[in-house]
Length: 127
Image 1 (cartoon, rainbow, N blue to C red):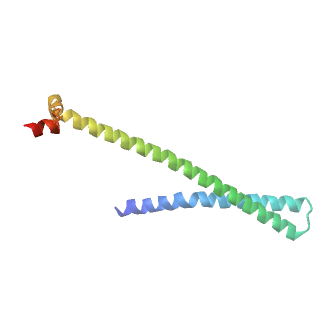
Image 2 (cartoon, rainbow, N blue to C red):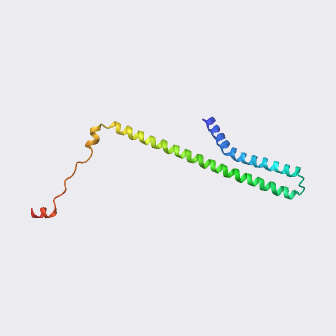
Image 3 (spheres, rainbow, N blue to C red):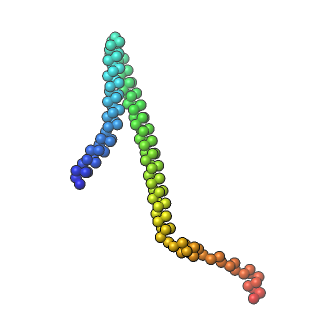
């Protein structure tokens, strides 16, 4: 039992940390490549290089985060639809099982008979 719990916890950590770590690593890689390209191009202004690197890092981070949120929202919608479909099928199966347990004549006899309308007030007063 403890082993399952710890494996579930590590799986949750992996599921939560992996996308965030991936965005961070991709942003860092893009920033590093941009700094190397700027240095190789002969740009000597270190402040301009750092500003561009910061903007590239932030841009990749924001874009990656937006992609992550979109993917999670789409996956959530798909899972929600699947869950609703399963619930609907389960309810239909329960209803079918319930209807199959009653004999067919029993359901027909349970409907109330038509009631007669009470006599009009004038007729009851005259009697």
